[in-house]
Image 1 (cartoon, rainbow, N blue to C red):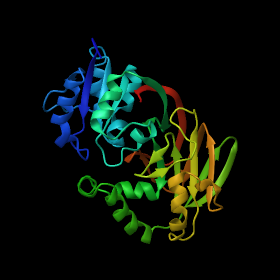
Image 2: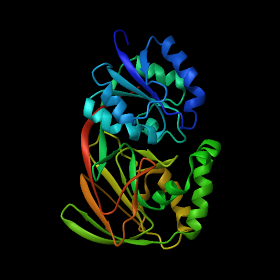
Image 3: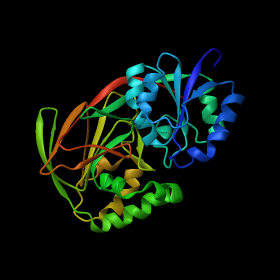
Image 4: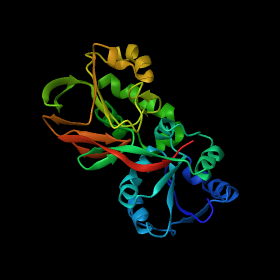
Length: 290
């Protein structure tokens, strides 16, 4: 984009960020995309970096997975800078949500063509998320899945750790408040989605988008972990709300309370804990899309 400069932020800890950084630089130059990078040894957060460059760049390019994008959310919201995404993470669920090609050259071409759209962000106790928030099994999975395992095994790593966790997982009790009603749950996991895809192949809801102004909630109320095997195809397609063991609805705000604090997983990162209030920030940031 002639006359415009991007702040390039490639997460060296993402699955292929460090290895592919030289390639990223080369491809950006070939696409005539001007960019600046942070100095070696920079110790600030991703969002701080964005805010510090808010008056000197016109947009931000983030290379990494959903956790890398999550770290940029506050800075993007506060500066109003547009976001270009380079899918260099393990699952790249948000990239899939916006229809971004996983091929690096094609993803950079999307940025070069400058077509943007405004997307929503989810909010959990003031912490932002792109894709999905969860309490229960997925949060336990996030705590157990190390960076080393994600880099080495990729999506297979999710499955390996998930299988071990499922064998010993149990239901927990939660109180759900939404749309003027209060409900008691016994559940394996509750999820609140803003985007469409999460967890390396699961779908929040078959009709979900990151710009529909809604949060999509579901609760897996199965009494035996092996029932999830039957549910798996529906979880992948986003039709799990049709099952009697799954409570599902769409809303703009909800609160979840548990008897003891439980970790809340936001885009694969543990950022807050219950009690947690969710809301939607509509048309919050601009993203380059095909």
